[in-house]
Image 1 (spheres, rainbow, N blue to C red):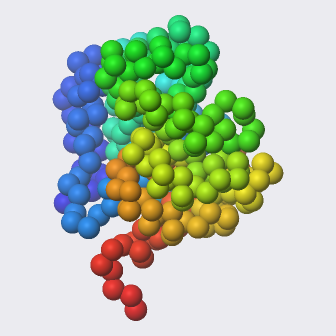
Image 2 (image 1 turned 180 degrees about the vertical axis):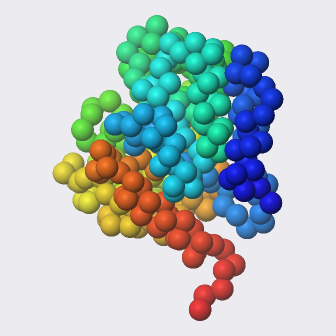
Length: 287
């Protein structure tokens, strides 16, 4: 049995940072074998949740809620990071049993910004970019997707931003492009836009590569992010749809309430999501 103590002991051995590539670190943090009946999707945390926290503080909160996947934001690992800085970053994640699985969201208004983002993702050692490119850049993004063999997931931002406000707007922009171009589906912003995130998950599921897991207080622009258990989105129905479409990506909790003191809300949301998944697991006997 691997305990946290033995994991940390084993993780600290041997290789120096200078000899560890991002791919080596990510491979060493491979997830445990999945048990029969386990869900295909993986609970994660979106880096933006920790906007006001340094990496050490972020990892401490992740340990407390026992979540092991992080989508990397550039305020924790800057785009211009050196190879040594990237290796040190991955080693720090490894010490907490965390894997960085993607980067972003990254806004891209120029071809140079696109180039920088793809180079960054390659050096970090991930195969997923969460991006928000200007629409005129989409043909160039497609070219880079083919060149780097990466998935590129465009984030929908709801009624606050005209660029990609809905899941449909993203899908319509990428549906005729390379199949590695898809969505980072923000279910909360989808609801705030007035759409149905459960129906949209079913409709666009094959092009959803990542998602921001959140609930909101109202299906309008005025709706605010809240704990998963307290909003207007039916989370059990959403989990059922995740299973129906066989979603196998990450469900990255993006908690934007109480962002300077988020741990209680993160813990409640993580516990609720796990409880829903366990209570509704196919084949589970009802009392």
